[in-house]
Image 1 (cartoon, helix red, strand yellow):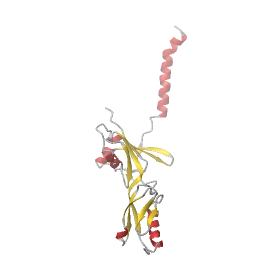
Image 2 (cartoon, helix red, strand yellow):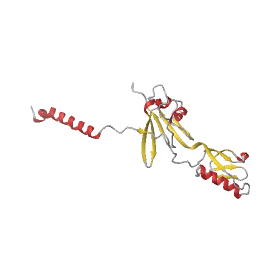
Image 3 (cartoon, one colour):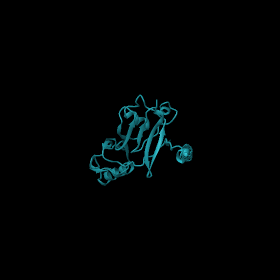
Image 4 (spheres, helix red, strand yellow):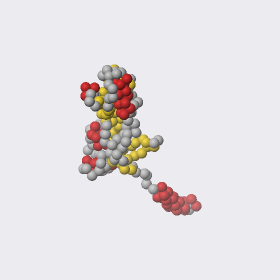
Amino acid sequence: MSFTSGYAPLLRVVSIHFFTAILVACGPPPSPSTIPTTIEATDTTLGTGDVFDVRVYGEDALGGTYMVEADGSVHLPFVGSLIVAGLDPGQAADHIAKTWVDGGFLTNPHVSVLVKEYRSKRVSVLGAVSRPGTFPLTAGMTVVQAISLAGGFSAIANRAATVVTRHQQGETVRYRVNADAVSQGREEDPGLRAGDIVYVPERVF
């Protein structure tokens, strides 16, 4: 018997123990953490296609629903086109109010802008759902609502292992969402941010 063949079994055993030690030391791969139930949007600025309501206290006729055009503008009573793209709702409200005041149409208007749908900001729903795709982010949209837009879970969906992937502060973070617990009222339905990816894995049979 050669030296190599004689020690081959021993080398295999040592190798196995060596790699096992490495795996134990490294630990299991990181799992998604729990998503915050209350989320402040990182970007609330208006963009093309966004839909919002304008309300003017005491001047109901001036209120209405508007959509940001491709050039970033909306068409308002008395003043015509006004650029609002790049402004957040509060800034847009101040800009609208100032334009009416500067034009001599109102003296001290109390204007509010309430975003109904962020079409310029979208979320993706992938995996074991009926219609995977990308959808406009509506104000207050939650994980389960986004899944509903995608046609709901498929028959083989692992609802309890739903994952939300989010980019924040230069990092990619994954959050686990137990959609079953949400549907049963045992957990809150987390809100989504623009750019979030909701992934529903398949069940392992």
